[in-house]
Length: 385
Ligand code: GDP
Ligand code: MN
Image (cartoon, rainbow, N blue to C red):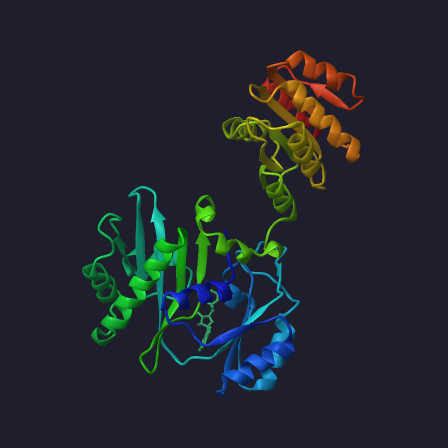
């Protein structure tokens, strides 16, 4: 789960990670009010969307008066911001963060991620802040200093020193840098994050270190331990079909192709997607209805696939085990009653109650073709899509 920059900064503050003063606004007038209460000469107005690269895309602007805050907020709110992370369709801006502008001396990068190969959190720091870290890693990897933390021992003071000296920080910043890194790491652990990224971490001309930007991703599998985080999720940032699937406990991910796929079991779903590609088409989604899906869940899954206008044909690939093929057929028929099925369906059914499932579907009046095996099914659906 991702959250907005302004939400991430509220969490950082709880962990004593310094952030610029500011507030979030949904209207230009609110933005003005925040700037007025902040005081000072200049302000930054920042679009709040779940994507980086906002600066380059025109979503981060500096205002040098209160009236400029109003006009910038007016321009940014409601704009469709396109960055290299949003895709060409961009993202509608509904909120802006208004902050006191800082006089920046140095921009650094600081991130904490889980390194699966080492099975440890890794802290990364770089003197090349403010730009994409992927680019720094590709061009100047020597500018990225890394420290893996042994979870049994915890973050050690020598490691924060290695990071601070490694990026060439002025020695008098060692103490604030160490507590910045330690506090950030504590937050990463406390919330079971998969990523915490401060880019840039700035040193101001008066020698303060602050998190100018913040990106936080939580591990969804650990969210049950952090119920207080769940309200931070912004449904506007989620794909509406994925949101709907989540409500019904379906593992659904929307993709860019034209073949809708309904499969039980993640492994079978992966294999089905591979075969669709092999047959020359692209899957429109990943959908694992799970081993013990009810007719209701099948109906919801089928309805979600059908409501994607890009879907030109559907492949139902089920190996009936705990989920019986007749239950699958009932679910598909239930969904077909609720929504008009205008695309062809290819079915590959095997396993428990296969014949019963085929008979039910055969008598349903739906337009579908039975495939002999998976490859045959993939070829048929690719030809139709
Ligand atoms: P991103 O482009 O989505 O990563 O958004 P950031 O929050 O990182 O902002 C992009 C850039 O805007 C930063 O790297 C800074 O160079 C600049 N910026 C943001 N806030 C301030 C500020 O208070 N003062 C100054 N001078 N620049 C800022
Ligand atoms: Mn940034």
